[in-house]
Amino acid sequence: MSNKTLAILKPDCVKKNLIGQVITKINEAGFKIVAMKMTKLTNDSAGGFYEIHKERPFFNDLLLYMTSGPCVPIALEKDNAVADFRKLIGATDPSNAEEGTIRKLYAESIEQNIVHGSDSDENAAKEIAHFFSRKELLENYNK
Ligand code: CMP
Image (cartoon, rainbow, N blue to C red):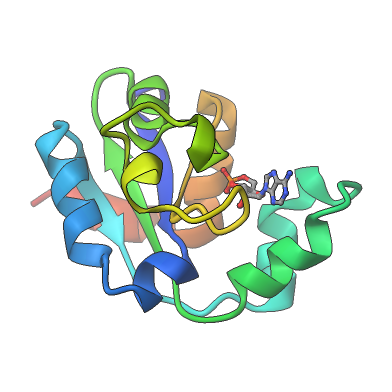
């Protein structure tokens, strides 16, 4: 899975009508979209996805935010996908993000930070499987 990563265009991205701009940045950086959907997360789905953060003080707010409206999970493919995507989106806190990164350009706060990117190959595999069946991915690969 080392050439794949999972992005989520978060509810603030969708609400601000930024889906097109952010996907353009992702494509311009050389990523191929291998699966994509728009979905509104349930509390259970968001809680499972962010299970790793369940003891953190921001966990409940994170779930409220991630279930506040539709989001767009996207499975992406590129050599060195995890690291290259994290470079493209910038630091979690947009005030620390480098100029030109997606979060620097569009994010408002450390919580409402427009986009998620997997932090390891292992988590990328788990996160892609959280949103997409093997069939959904394979159908896209074969096109
Ligand atoms: P993400 O990269 O999706 O991973 C976990 C998310 O939790 C993160 O983006 C933010 O949306 C949120 N988050 C991380 N740290 C904090 C924090 N200190 N305060 C509030 N939200 C946070």
